[in-house]
Image (tube, rainbow, N blue to C red; front, side, top):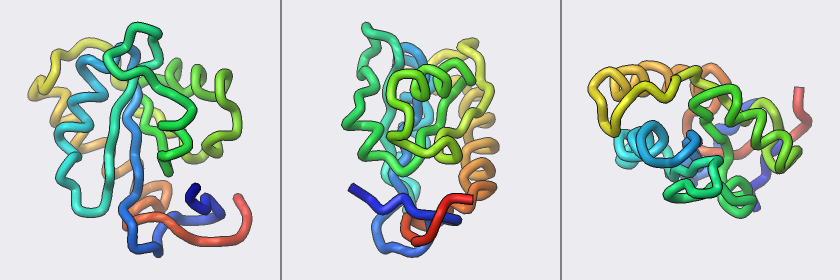
Length: 136
């Protein structure tokens, strides 16, 4: 498993592993996965919190990820309640995107393209993973 040590996650050669999370894994998180699939510095996946999600979020998938990008606060809270500590809280990001969009909806794509890179950059999550030390 990756060293999730401190500060920023830049430094190692491998791509940053990002899992996008929504409820059903049918509209929002698969859209995010589709539009960021070719990002040169990220390896992406998507999953849902519901039992009947197209791809249900598992502990293994969360352990694979360096960061989870949640569409809503409820998804982040669900992860915290179910698997506290698998990812540090500062690696559970929330976008605040409600379940109001269809798959690949132009407005959803624009929101994701604006919010996701900014949120990852805002956390110092730019060019892969690495670092050592302690959490702030």
